[in-house]
Image (tube, rainbow, N blue to C red):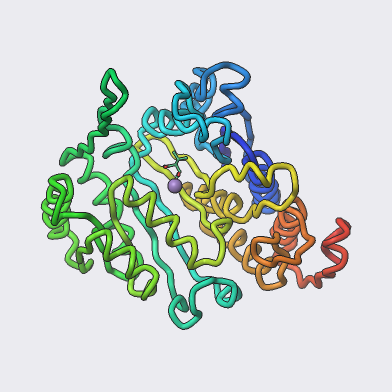
Length: 372
Ligand code: IPM
Ligand code: MN
C-alpha cells in the first residue's frame, strides 16, 4: 500500500515523539513492503513563530492532500500564561479538526498487565480495563459562539449540537461497540443541559438499529467517579466534545501514564492520529518524553487503513518494551532509557518480529544495537 502522510510535529516534545512513530512506520513499511512517504509542515506555536499563523494555509493544504496526518503536540507556556493573546497555538489544532471534518475522536484506554503496579490506582480496580472513548470533536462548546462584553467583565461560550452532528458519531460508536463487547455508555448531563437531552433522544433512537448493543446512560459527574472506582465496567463510551476531553485525561491514569494514550480523529474524508498528551514543554529535548502514545497512534493509522497485521506488530513491540521495561522515566523513575532508544527498540522489534531475539538491556541504554 502507498500512503502519503502529512507530519505535523508541532510544539514541545511533539517533534521527538513523532520521530519515533515515523521510525515504527518505516519499519512496518520495510517488513510488509508498503510505501509510506512523509512530508512535514509547521503547526501551533512553532508556526506562529515562523508565520504568525498557528495553522498556515500551506499546512492545511498538505493535510487535505494527504492520506493521513500524523500529529505531535501543541501548546506553549508563553501563550498559556497570557489570557489576552490574540493568536493561540491551540487554535491551529481546532481549526485543523474543523477544516478536515474530523468529527469522531477515538481514545482507547487499556490497563496493560505489565503496568498494573505502576498505576496510582489499586491493581484490583483497574485490572481488565479495556475501553474506548468516542469523543465528538468538531462541535459543542469548543466551537459555539464566544462572547466577551466591551468591559471585559462578562463572557460566554455557546454549546450547540444538531441532530446530524450527534447521529454521525453515534453510528461510529455503535459500530465499534458491536465489534467489541457490545456495550455503549452515553455520558452526558441530561439532568441539566438541553444539548444532553438531545443527545439522549438521538442516541436512543439510533440504538434501535443496533439490537446487539446494550445502551446505558451516565451523568458525566457520576461517570468521572465510576471510571476510577470500576473502570472495567466500560466498553465504549460516547460523549460530547468537552466531557470527552476531560474524562479521557482522567482515563489516562488507569494506564499508568498519559504518555501511553493514542488517539485517532476521523471524518468522512480525512484522518489524523495523535497522542492525547500535551506538548510537555519542560521535557522538550531532554529525551524523557514517552514516545509510546505517538507510536500507538501510528498503529491506529494502520488500523484505519485496515492494515491490521501491521498494527498488531506495533502493539506487540510496545508490549515487549513495557514487559522488558524499555521505557522512559514516566513509567520507571530511575530509567535512563531515552525517547529515542524506546523508539529504536520498537522499530528494531518490528523489523525482527518473526525471529527469536534476545534483548540485552545494557546495550539499549548505551545506544548500541538492541539485538544480540
Ligand atoms: C486534546 C487537547 C486539545 C483539546 C487542546 C490542545 C485544544 O487537550 O486533544 O485533548 O482540548 O481538545
Ligand atoms: Mn485534552
